[in-house]
Amino acid sequence: MTPSNPLRDESGSTPLESTAQIMDRITSQLGSQLNLVSLHGRRRTEQPAAPAPALVVVAHGSRDPRALDTVTTLLDRVRELRPGPAVRLGHIELNEPLLTDTLAAEKGSAVLVPLLLARGYHVKHDIPGAAADAPHLDTRIAAPLGPHPLLVEALHDRLLEAGWPTRPDRRTDAVVLAAAGSRDPDSATDTRRTADLLAQRLGVPVVPAYATPTDASAPGVPDAVRALAARGRHRTAVASYFTAPGRFATQCADAAPWIASAPLGAHPAMARLLLHRYDRARATAPQAPPRQLASA
Image 1 (cartoon, rainbow, N blue to C red):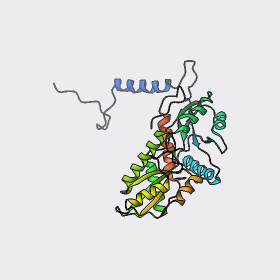
Image 2: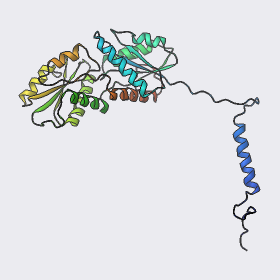
Image 3: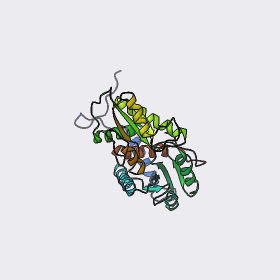
């Protein structure tokens, strides 16, 4: 026996739906409509999504007025890239608004993103302490910005702007990565890692040095320049590993025997990196106690 042909319409070309198919379609449509009705017979409304946590950028603070202008421009770039979350600013010291005041005025939840380039006292103690003093907030603390390839992108661009050659001489050229300095060994580790990443990008030696050297293993910028010259590196550039202009950045640039780059400032890669740290921290559980840091 041959199987019966499916039902067709009068033209003989289009199959007609079976009774079972029609009932399945009606049941599906009814189910979709019933999902919009509450148990009390009222039409359901979609629940609004919870607002994104505020992105609180934590800057160190500086007496140099250019620093605040630079950070303000950077935050504007972050807002352009991500219109969703509220973007706030809080300083550890020297400038208003202070971080404690920013957190006191905030509601709901916040992710604190250090505008700092390495681990150190501010990252490990000051920022978690400020979060602990704001128990009304659901807070998360992001990792510092460095080390990260986006920092290397910004450092490279700043060097090119200062006159670094697109094809450096691998025999005579070198770079001193000038940083603020810290007694925390983790800070030195993070800075060395950034120097290594920049050396890979440039193809020449990159030596970390500091505006405020703490010991013989952390040389000052002039010492690093002299050491490189003794090795035959007679064209040494100073890469400013600072987030904004200030006394330390100027001091290190003055020690450059050749060219010195501008601070990282409001480079587009910095805005992207702040959002990357925000996203990573937001994906973690709320901090308890608030001194725990999100993974890098």
